[in-house]
Structures are given as C-alpha cells and as structure tokens.
Length: 254
Image (cartoon, rainbow, N blue to C red; front, side):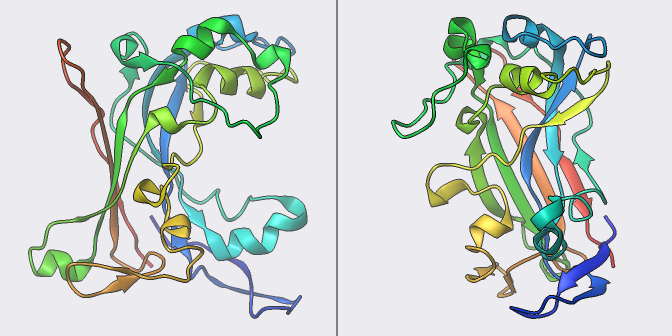
C-alpha cells in the first residue's frame, strides 16, 4: 500500500490546509461482505430476503489516512482519506459454511434508538449475527530484522457488529441502489466494547495520544514505512470443522 497524499490541517485552528503525504496512516479491522444475486435498480431488498443476497465473507482492511479524513470530513465526509487502498483476504467463505456459527444479533443498549420496522425481523434478530474470532497483527522492519514475531494489536469478534449483514444490505439498497454479483460491502470497524480489541490505531492509541510499545522497543501512533499489517480470522465450535479465512496482509511503502 502506497502512502497517500492529500490535504491535511497544518495546525489546530488553522483553516488553510497543506498538500503532503499522510502522517496518520491507519488500518481498520473489518469483514468483507460479498454480494451474490444482487437487486435491480430501484428495487430495495427487504430484510426478510437480504441474507440470501450475501454469497460469503472475507476479511477487509479498509485503510484510512486519518489526517486527510479529519480535514475533509466536514462538510464532505470521508473520501480521499479512504479511497486509496483496500486489502482483502484470498478467498470467499460461503454463507452456507458459516451457518453453524450463526448467533443472535448484538444486543442493543437501553439508550439506543429503536429500529424502524424495515430493519426489524425476528429471524434476523435471532440468527443474524456471527461468531468469528478476528485478530490484527503488526510487524515492523526492525522486528523482521531481529526475527521478532508480529505483535497482536487487537483481538475482536464479529459478534460485536452493531448491524447484521442483512441489515446492511437492506439499508444500502433502501433508496434503490442496485447491488451486483461480486460487489463488496465493508462491515465497518469491528471493535470490542472495552479496550481489549479496538480495530484501528485511532482507537488503540486514543486518537493518537497514547503510543503503543512494540517488542522491538519501537512505538507507534500510526503506521510507518515498511510496517506490515495482517488480519486473520477463524470460526470454531465443538462438533464442527474449524474454518479459517486466510490472511489479509499488506505492507506500507512510501
């Protein structure tokens, strides 16, 4: 992954940006949701049918340039800070293969807003979630030079997804957007409710204020040249075959 260039804020309170390489390159631990049949333009997919439109799953590193993203976020929303690269795992794990690892959707908090009727379905609430163990690993050039194993940055699980994949398909097609076979939806960063499994450096370092110390003695707030990020995942349950997802792996170059 080549480090992107873009407009970034030069200092707090300064409204004139500078054009330069991102200094806050980040990873995001996500699931890749691969679309199967898809839908015709102008025909939304109801929640009752949405699961049948998912062909399978993989891993997605949705790279982010946080300083570019911060500048453009208001009023445009993320664009240049997100569009420069995505890294996926090497194969698609079919939805059928993951059937034994289905579980209830993530419980919503008492203060969360109620779901509108088109995003409510008893079957999806009961079995729309998935138990997939997720991990993110970091290896730096110095660590590889010293033959040090990659450092695990995060251990999370797909059961922490706030929205089910079916809800995502329904919401994405709500206005009539046509999904096509082979389209890829990103789940959004999958982090744990506590600090044990944040799925990005932005969260892990509390907004770039608390550096992570690595086995080599190096510290990181964001990714540097030569850093390699690997995402892995697996499903396991007594009486069923363990399923792996392969690795989503990429190295940063300047």
